[in-house]
Amino acid sequence: MNLMLGLILIFSIFNYLYNDGYQGPTLTNIFVFVVAVAIFFKKPLNLIWLLASMGSYLVLFYLEVESKIHVSKNYRSPQDLFLDNSISIVLCIVFIFIGIYLLIINYQKQHQILLDLKKENQIHLAELSSLNSKKNELIALLSHDLRGPVNTLNATLQLVDQGLLDEKDLSKILFSLKSQSFQMTQVLNNTLAWVTSEMQMSEMDKTETDLKELGELMVETMSFQAIRKNQSIVFDLKGENRQVNLEAKEVKIILKNLLDNAIKFAPAGATVYLSLTTSENQILWEVKNSGKLISEEVRPYLFDFQVKNSFGTEKEKGTGLGLSLCKKIADHLGMRLGYRVSELQENVFFLEIKVKSE
Image 1 (cartoon, one colour):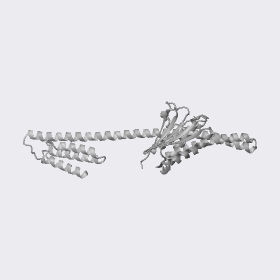
Image 2: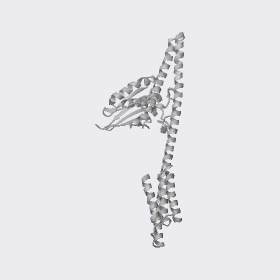
Image 3: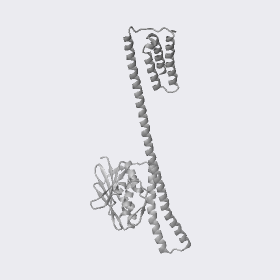
Image 4: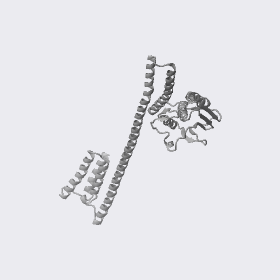
């Protein structure tokens, strides 16, 4: 670029000497030269070239006026002079206009990119602030909920150590602690799964899975919790059993949370249904319970990360973390997790999985 500008400047000097000096088109060439330097060069090169071009022209101009140099006169008439200069002026104006226009367009694009980047950073910052606030709420909630069972356990151990509890009282306290520990284990498992997914440390591996065995395993896993409320869990297979390559660990987390919620919010003595519908390209898990229907106002926010206390039909405590965790996992795996109301006015949570036909 510097070599090219040097050659242009030399050409402009010769053009001045052999093309009517200050009456010729050399001045317009210098203007174009200055605009090009201003657009394409940064300090200090632009200042150097500016001084070189303007200085060269002014020196030549002075020497011609003082008759120190000879300048060739090539124009035969004023009309020829007008025509040549007019063409040079038009070309100069067009070049300067295009150069400044491109410069402005480039500036506007850069400015818009910076604005978009700033806006995106503000959005990310707001999301991080919101997530950090929710995590702080979660930590505070977990600390509060853990303190109760731990204090109860410490007090119970002290009373046992002092021999102040009879067998009947101890049995009641242990039953209560067992119930609390089951709920807190579920909350802690969800919390750990959430933190792990946020840190992206867990690999979601696919394994060959027998769908019927998976359903029966989920019923067996959650049966103890259901028995405590005199409830039963019924597994219903609709369609043929299949062996499918899927993320079994993550599916278990989702189904366990859905069953846990169904048991928690269904009345004592109710039946919770876990159904599996299979087809060539789809697997559909549904968890139904006959508890109080979720209000229409709450439904749009069911799967949002909202740390809050919730209580089941027998005051079982939850944090609202499980469904948001399930939704995050399902979305990451390309599964569809949702809620609907059945024809029998039951709460139905469903997990839809698309599979490739064999």
